[in-house]
Image (tube, rainbow, N blue to C red; front, side, top):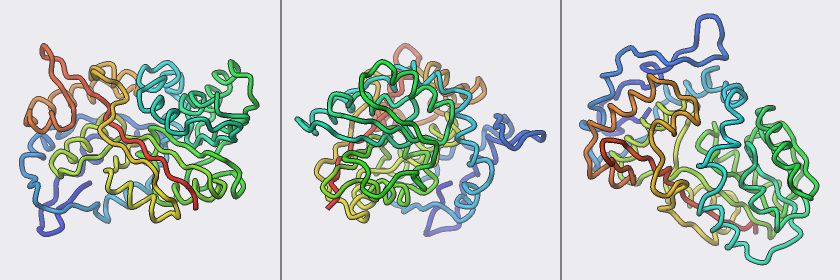
Length: 321
């Protein structure tokens, strides 16, 4: 969790507050309602002028079995992502296709592909699509959805941090709405660069972090309540640094996008991820104590008492030199 660098302040550990493994199974994550009130005033005590970093404790938490259950969790909800209106199509996917223009005959690697909506949205540019994901049920969704396309497909089980792909295998290597789950995003991008041909493209569409520390913390709280396997939403400046340090030349970096223009209700957002009623209630209560101007910066609207979440995103297109 975020902590202040210049002082001894320690916000409550959200994972300890909200999530615990069941005593019987280390592979199952359940919501616990203890101490929900501890986070309600979190954003009230944060100061925009203070720099934040992740603590060593948070880093260790991400190495525990709790954070290693992402694949198991997505195995149980894979069909939701195939049908999800957030994941099926978005302006960012259309925009990415426009940016690569008339490129044809591409071998595409879709990393942490899920059902591979992103990869299949580029099928008109492709002669072959390889879907890579650590969840076997997500790969099944990839195969089922891919049967509608008359191009060769291949599915491989693996993680973004250790891709099961040869050096310079792909003309275009992409990942959408997945990097915020990566345990080590820099290693993942280095791997995506490795498997991309020289002169080829690495493309990312993912949740957009906020440069304002208070707003970024609100976003972080919401995303962890929504999905305990969330790690971090990165800002545009952070993505610029990550991509630039991976021997990639950034050709396009666009933020302020939305994967669901007009927003999605908190109820539907939680339904897709199967967050559970306790998480849904906690998100709603948390939003109601947040400052409206800060929610506006995150694109979150309240209409007739119902909150709408825009799934703010950014798009990055970079070329391997």
